[in-house]
Length: 111
Image (cartoon, rainbow, N blue to C red; front, side):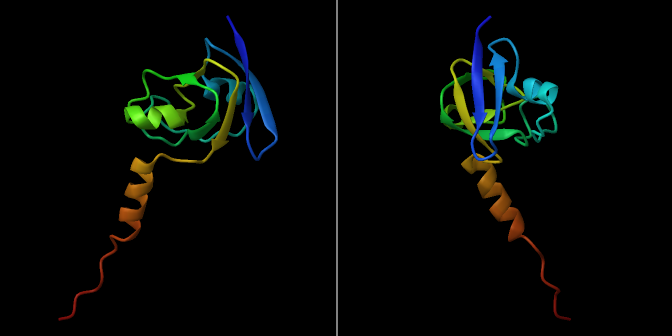
């Protein structure tokens, strides 16, 4: 079992996480308020941008292959090196969905 340092940029929070545990599970054990919902790699609530380092996350079904290189789903991601992550950063696929949803309001129809 290898241990890695995971630093959350901008918060001053750092954890030590083994390659056998998910980043989210370690955050919860340490009392760090990491957002999450489904815990099965689909909802993207626990997404963080990978600024430095690498993770393995074969079950992160909510990300495309390209997104999985730049973003970690902390509920699935296990470190394979020391990491710097920025929490609350979402892949382009979800950012596009959020923009589309905000513009989909319906106007009142004139009679």
